[in-house]
Amino acid sequence: MNRYLRTATSQQLLIAAHVSQQSNPLTHVDVNRFRTGQGPCRANLHKWSLAQSPSCDCGQQQTMNHIVDTCPLTKFEGGLDLLHEADVDAVVWLESAATAALAK
Ligand SMILES: [Zn+2]
Image 1 (cartoon, rainbow, N blue to C red):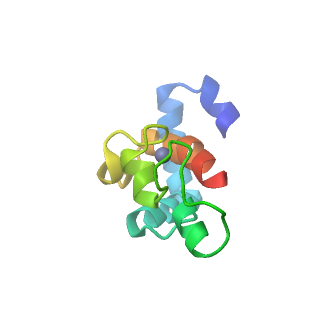
Image 2 (image 1 turned 45 degrees about the horizontal axis):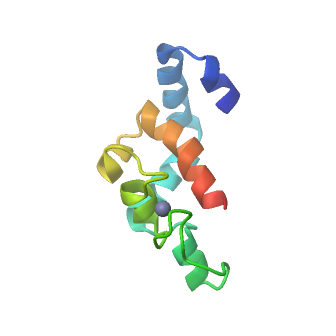
C-alpha cells in the first residue's frame, strides 16, 4: 500500500483508509495496542527480556504512549484521541512511523 500512497489522490486515500478499516483488522489491533499500552515497544520487549534496552532512538524510554504522544521522532499530531478516529492520517501514521518504530 505504501507504493500506492505516493501517487494516490486524497479521494483515493479516503477510499483506501475505509477499505483498510473494513478489510484489515490490523489497524484496529494497532490502535488498541496503543490504547492499552500492550504493544511491542522497547519498554515492553525489555520487560519481557526480548530487547537489551527500553530506550527509544530519541533517548527516552519507548513505551506505546511515548511513540504516539511524546516522541519527537514518531509522535502522531493529535495524539491517541485522534488516532482512535482512524482517519487517513492515522492509517498512514500506523503504516509508516509506528510500524518503523515498532520494527526496530
Ligand atoms: Zn522516542
